[in-house]
Image 1: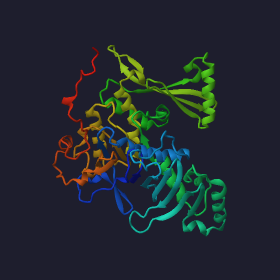
Image 2: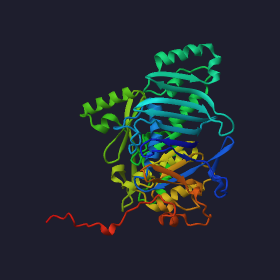
Image 3: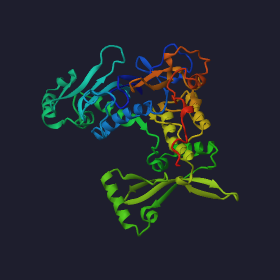
Image 4: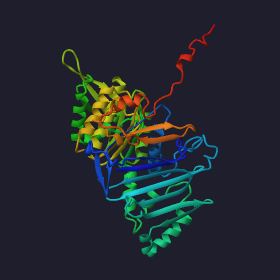
Length: 453
């Protein structure tokens, strides 16, 4: 579970800001929205509002940065760097990201610092959750191009680990790569929590950008009958004119045509490099094809939708023949299925994109009302219909707004002492909480000033 995220000198975050999932102890409404975490609790929902360019998506990108860094063991490339560019000293100040989270058995704090493209600091602690001191697992730093690393006390109880530390500092660790995932491959004695922390960052945290499809959806649906039934029922429930879904399985040569030898050879080469027996391809229309190799057979799996003709016959459509909203709903299906059933964290940018307000409100409301959910759903949105105190607690509503220096500020509705009967939607649209667009005086905009003579 996500507990908190701290951001400093990252994109529009010029100053240190914190986003957290900690409940306000004063609130008693929607008590099933809290999950126990050690001696604390965390919330299961959060919605982040703000004007365009206020920095909502940069909060999502901070989590994407940490996920990418862990998975790829390198800093994601970005022309001009990741620092706050409206500060003359921003390039030379550290960019800092820190995340506190509850994994399967332990809570952790993982933090990194980047200066001029170099990962100058990285540290991992077992969090005490505010009850005592946090316990060091490792701390890695770079000074004058030299990497140094130190560990918690338990590490040094094994004499062989002292030799390993010397090897790490002088031969194995490099300035531009993090240590966390690499250390898990060494199976270091006396550091059993390393794998648990890395697994959560790799698998427990899932960040979804507005255009991200559900990768290999057809493949996973074909291997999980319960998920297939869930997806089929959900897509029918929203009355989109879709009568269900169909999973197609076609031999590779038959799908691409036996004459497409070059394309088939490239796919086979891609499969061999992946080493997983599965790759995904997609076209501009939104169709995704999963190429699977099993028992010396290579085949293509893809998702089709069912429609009934006026005569009652069934017709199959590819996803690029469906509306943007229908495709978006299809892509959200596995997300909601997983976040309901598993203790994962989904952070979704622009969750309402291409969806009718009634559909997204019903989806969020169903998750909100369910007392048996397991995961956390966090999202950015402009959809004010969700500002409903029967769906979201006040401490689950956040706002992003830029200050006079162009730096993103983050604050919760908890900052405002509102009664539980208050119309939050009306208050937000009237500017009571800030974080809305300031359009200036549009009456002075002359549409025709630049008309050709």
